[in-house]
Length: 584
Image (cartoon, rainbow, N blue to C red; front, side, top):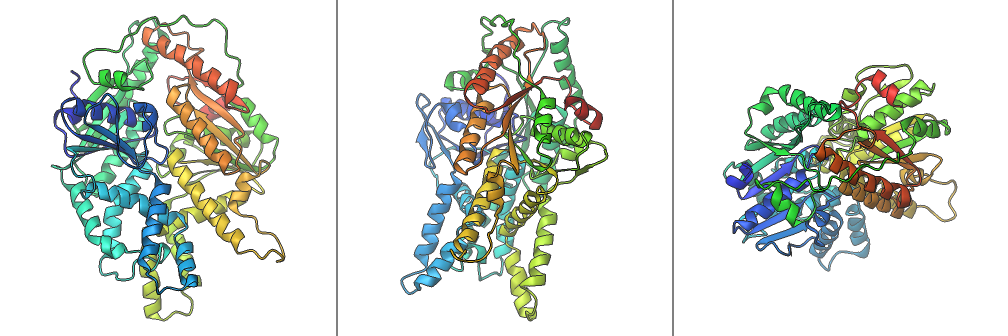
């Protein structure tokens, strides 16, 4: 049996978090199955708006616990932000009572239509799990969204508890009768549960690469600041070459060893487990059960590599295709860990090299773009949408407009309302809208947050569009152009979906593409990143992965992508202007 601390000494609440693509879901699922097999009653919950628990467990899930077949005692569910928001709106409107006028009810309904409501509703579901809504389970395991989204979620109990202290008015963005004050004790109980090491353990999942380790170290520090100090480090996907003559395999092992050797001391001091790299897709109970046991997954017939080369253009062709437009917004999207930041940075550098003015920014709270670019070049501006900075800017703007003419008491009440955690979401949306508009006259490359967080941002964009267009008079002068309309315009916006040649990332990119199409946004093309097909490796484990790679590349080419581009695997991710320039 592999020594894995979350199995050996589990607390009632287990959180699996980390950079996108490091294997949080597979480890959370394997732990849940392992604990259930030992006789515990376990609830596995995804807080990721782009959850793939269904695929991993091979069972259709909902926002209520569903029994997992062939795993006695194991139940699973997804926290569905939209379903939670609908339920929350119904509860708030019901509290208004019969005396309220139709106009007042309409006003409250409009207040409850934005992203703030979606966030607080999903948060309320999360808090309920910590506060005993799902009593009867020995363990509740949270498979979380990528780091930035998760840190926001885990910080909310503290943020809302602070906001509601001595506040009798609630938050206007959530309706005047939202009942938030009634939730104060519940939020406080959640805060206590998260900070109690006897009840809560956070499993920081990372890969043995520098970017994932850097983010794990940052996350660990931020969790400490939130009083979540009971942490375990899980290094997933450890690889050891079987043949010292295999250049590619040896390079991969060396890169992992060097990354772990340079781990920050704050992270190195944590209890640590290492989980090996597998040649199979981690899908289904059979594979999940074998992940954390001493019985290795078989390397059966590592299928002979097809000698036929896969002929797909590289990133240079993509940049050439984009450059024909002279200006516009390029949104790079996909599952966490697929290399969005590197691709976005390479596209921006490539466009600047071709003589264009380029603004490279990111909506990802992890904000790795500056680490990847690591330099300057003419025509390229690099920054980020920083939630803290944007919130301060938004508050100052509101005080200068709505606060003008208010007396001291009125300003104090306005400031109190702006202290709501919802304000950050609104501020980030306003910053995003500004970036979208900027692309009318220049190239703007946007490295987006992992899928779930980005979908919530697009939800806010849709809500704003509906609000603005509903206020238009049919015969009124002029025409309003909302951010959503710019995203829907293929001459203004090109969405690039990035994936790895693996089952889950391709499935999630396909699901994202469907979500975008429902919003009237058609992706421009797909980038398949980190492909082994030209590596020449003969390592049995890597050859098994390579055989599955070809299946996924064909899947993208033959039925999913309008245009597809391929980037070969590199022993070290490209960092710095020169390496990005070579890539693009």
